[in-house]
Length: 285
Image (cartoon, rainbow, N blue to C red; front, side, top):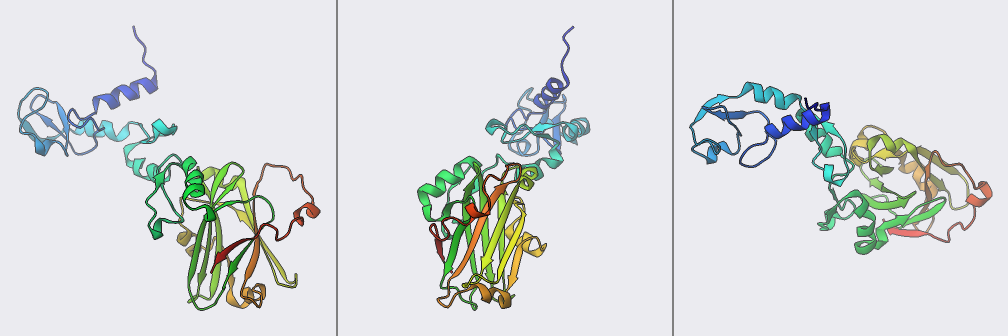
């Protein structure tokens, strides 16, 4: 007697629930002909008879097939790209929206007309080819600055960070109405891996004092930057304090680095102070 493993049995049942017309996995409502052959609700209106036996369709639904479809585990739509997750149909949309193997837009440049779409591993190559000035190699003590910094206009900056062989999104927002600036770094990948990385932002006044340092785990890219702001998860600074860190030429300098938390610190504080300002990355603000 042939013994079918549980996973194989699940796959066999999924195969039985494929629509004979579009070959998609069916979900409620599932309809049927007088002989019990099932068909999805999308394809039935286009046919007058059953595509298998040519009999007439009934107006009743197949409750057993619908119950079966609800309780089976289905492969992710990105399984061919490497996703091994199996979920029930009712949770499929939620998983697809956060799957690390999903299709990504060009987040930094989508609002200015870039129509690129691709997988996570394609983000850095695309940025280097099409938007080189917005693709940063961030390790330790990277010096950055914004030019023409003012206090009366809103400003949002989104860039891509390549660090530790992974992809991160850097966000900065100046909100003139709230009189506040916000910083955030998101990890692009599985949600549970976001806590494996830490980002640090260091602000220094033009004379070296005062100095302000903020560190936090990287945020998951599943949650939007605006949602993180509303939830109070981002580093934020009011204009009153922020003015201490903008020089007389309206330049705002800061340092940003991303660390992998399981890496041992090999450089001491003196190493962190090397090459200050030699790799400044400017941005118009």
